[in-house]
Image (cartoon, rainbow, N blue to C red):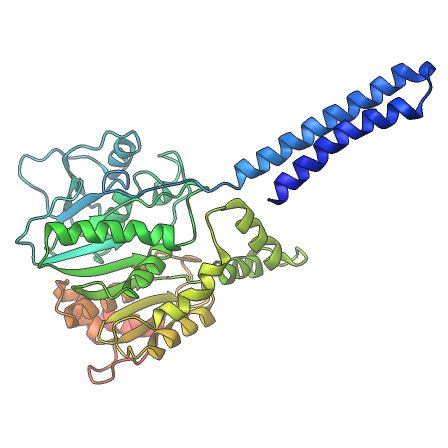
Length: 407
């Protein structure tokens, strides 16, 4: 409405100014009047064009999620006989080009292991599957494969499955479903409803294929936020929730980034937050204000483990405390916060920290989900006793080292 009024005002000026010129100036100045009128006309056209460009820039893209347009894949541990083999970089390029093979084996390159994962296009589940893992990945900003495939938009689902499987977060015999969020500028919304709808779409499809299967939700960063938001709906047969570095407030996140990296810029937290609001038109500030209230609707009996790196450059420590407190305020005493000290990375990649790998597998084992027995044993030495549900704990590098030596 404001833009419409501005355009109407400019058109009125375009009409009024030549009329005033016609009655105010003498005939000897006709050429001057024509020149001034032309300048006003061109200025008005330019302003109208800028207004239209701004409105286009701020217009969100309409996106209706489906299993196909989310590049959904199904991952199983171990290679299948006679299955073609592709390196993960090659597979990312295939998905990016829209040429995802029906089924492929991807080797997991490790120093002491030669495991592989089998990746199938689409949702490949059977009614007899009793357990399914649904992985919700973080934000990706790379638009071309080969530059930084850890954060590639189209094909990031395969890279996420590769990394999480390599680091023993996804390691069970149960199939794992992974998909790509639409991370384009005009669709991305910092894990709000438009992205939670993507997760709900895949979850409903899983329930249709395997209605009796228990679902384990695993989420990372933005994907962890959408997982928690969906849990507020109390979806049926969600057995456990394992989250890594979740952020719940775009404002808190941008303020944390500014405080870490833009200290010399005056009013940098507000400047950066306003820039993000302008750059991502699908983000709605009011949705972030109600997310914490929604968390209180989570099932009180749902086990949740949240991994958080101390002094994270994107997610302040106090936000994790607020998150845990709001979940507990709804009656859930099964939520636990696993904080660890690690300076290898500034954010994310909790799956690469051995102590978190151990704790994650111990948590999955306690919930009755498939896990790595060796890692779960180590994790039991880090986790609180079984009769102290809801207790949060911090793991220091020294503690991790002692457990590693003992194992």
